Image 1 (spheres, rainbow, N blue to C red):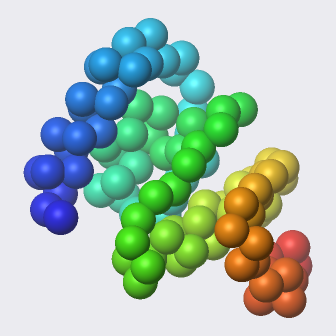
Image 2: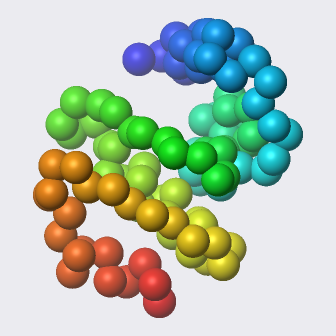
Length: 96
């Protein structure tokens, strides 16, 4: 997917679903182009955010970067693993 296609999809979602999104700073994804596209310059804080994508598209890598950023900023993160595939030992270093 191109950055322009992603930009268009995000714009449609933001304008259609959350027209009055609060201007609260988000949690950076560590991907500058993506953060610039998001209305809060990152993943919105204090909201439920679902990451979707086919296997092998980088969902877990992106989630890991977001969690590492949040933890390093002293924020709390809740991760809901509906598929029960999370291997806690692989995430132990995030808290360091």
